[in-house]
Length: 369
Ligand SMILES: Cc1ncc(COP(=O)(O)O)c(C=O)c1O
Image (cartoon, rainbow, N blue to C red; front, side, top):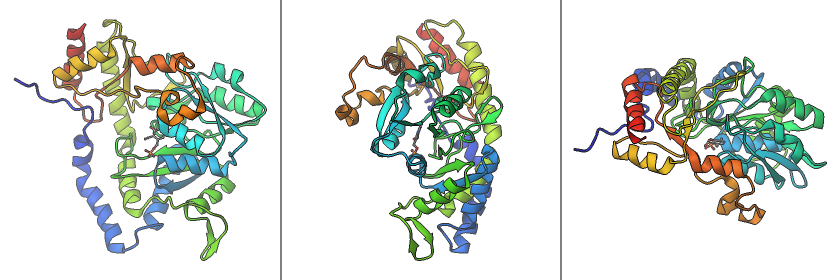
């Protein structure tokens, strides 16, 4: 008999109770007949800025564009160098690389799997212009160290907040530290749109104005095109949906943390499993619950046989992707990033997942060992 499938992620428990409210918000946009750059976008921009504790927010088409625009308005370009995590989703690297700047990857701290800030110093050169910390899997990077290092070396800081909506470092929410910060609202994120979406946050009114101009073809006023900008606007429907969903984000993050606590309690000292470690200054929002094991592929297969879907974030580090062949990185050059790529396994976790489901996953993991 084939076991009941236990998916990696399900939207049902989040979306079913909000169905009426979300459809009403969409209907209001429909009836208003104004679909791009209107009141729904403005309202969401304000709400997201307030949530993050950042004075300004600019809604854009997706998280990648938010990074691209952040790098653009911060003046990062050819001849510059950017410090990027060696262990991240490839979108971070793509955004940094399209500036024409040189990428300087920094190894992760294997405990938190975030950028190891103690290694920043060895990668600094006179050309270093920016640092791009990623709050991976839902845990903030060490922003005390990042900001101190950036001040010391006069660097621009751009947070990649795609995976850490609502996470905090030293009591302060992510996307509020850097000069210009990028968030993705891809559907699977902690706050997900019903399609693509993204936002840039900043405390700097000038950067805010520049980002607004750049996302809309470079128009500074009607029929006045000041620069060759791009088209990357968060549309009214997505903004309206995100505004409704944002009201539930804190509660959804709490639910994620509760499930993570249960996983952590159940998987203590099981086989060779290394559980995610949370820095004492960080409040994790568990976009993903990532364990590590030398037997990753075998464990994944055993869970699959029991109907339990898991994922790997990410099996190939950016420096070993074909897309970066021309950068000349070698296998073995970033051994810690490679080690995580070989051993990481993301277990199912979503708001609305039940304790029984977590128990089923944990029983299956114990059974494997
Ligand atoms: C760490 C990270 N950076 C950037 C992105 C890019 O976001 P998007 O897919 O909305 O362009 C993502 C998500 O896909 C991500 O996980």
